[in-house]
Image 1 (cartoon, rainbow, N blue to C red):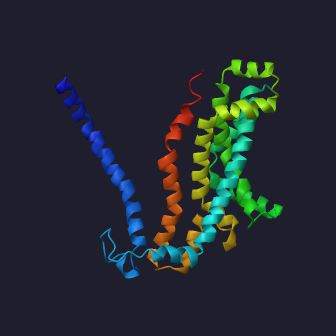
Image 2: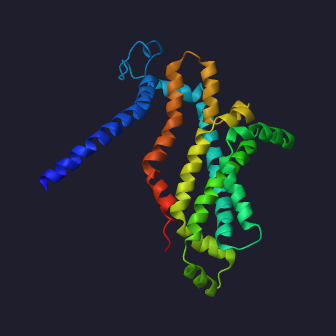
Image 3: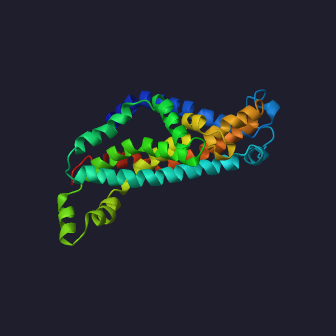
Length: 279
């Protein structure tokens, strides 16, 4: 038994070495970014150590106030929260209809949504921008929220529809006997059961909206409306050589994503596979 265990451990060593190396490569830029954010300007490239000579936490206060990161951070929170609310509500209702109703053109409409996943998002920017100009939505909050919501719907509908399809019909039949309407069944039964899938959709949506840059670069020019990823570009232009402040701003933008990853990443696999096995 001991020999078998040792052989198993030895056979896994190459995989563990590769994973450890990959982890170091992935984490090192984050560590360097945080270390650089606490250094002085002349120390960023002259001192290769990850430990600053003087811990300049004031860089974060300067980036937040002088760099206007407080406004950018709030804007990103607003865009993310509103987009997530719209996406969850609309996608869950659409997925419920696709999964449990039978109507003419159901499959055609569904595959139109899924087909949009194969279209590169930047490829739609020009017609989208022209449309926003004609509607008077360019350089407005709604001009970002609507495209963000539209971009999140396809994947959200795909995940939720798969989950809803595998909820046993007996639950639905029992609800009908108890006098539930279609909407009551959706709101009181299907949504509570779909929490793992909803969590997965939420994670993907939050990460996509928080990290989005190209559309915000095209649509938003008003600094008071810029999300944090767009604001970083403006901040870099104003402080071209002030790397500590730039790194402090990047750290501020990264912290929410790290928190989401560490506390909610387990729901991604659970939500995707939750509807894979029929009850």
